[in-house]
Image 1 (tube, one colour):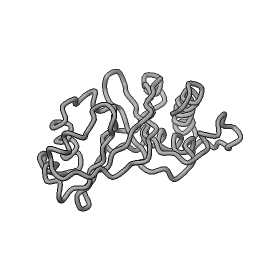
Image 2 (cartoon, rainbow, N blue to C red):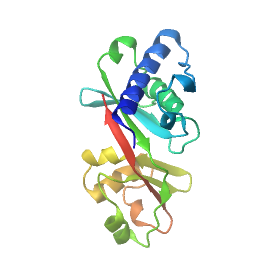
Image 3 (cartoon, helix red, strand yellow):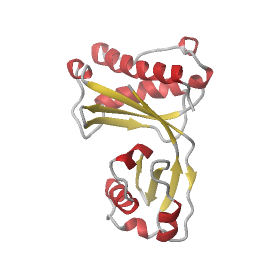
Length: 188
């Protein structure tokens, strides 16, 4: 987990990265020596979420750590503002009205269950982020999504639909893969 200084730095970095991209159409360059903590230079995975008022305005992230966390924040902040296919690209004026949240993810681990009842029994609302996979279809919900969809069955149904599957396919645990992770979530 990150300390308060590290969280403030990443939130500020996300905002700076979006502003830089919107003004110059280039990705902000930062060297590891400009980062206040070794933890932020280690490989990490995160999601950057933008809200305008109560409305989602963009959310893009990485499920597996493959670059320094500070670089993941830079790239995902810009992608969240400009490449989320559900929204038009953010503009500089709108950036002033957007609240930024970051979720730093733990490593996902396989979540083996023998049936739907065991899945419902082992899944912990508010704690677990969940990835589902069936064939080429996959989707994830961050742990924070439990705040909007607190019921386990409804959570799983919405996640299936997000993946392009039928809403009840989560019950077919033999043909579906499940992975869980946790997140250190913080906002401006």
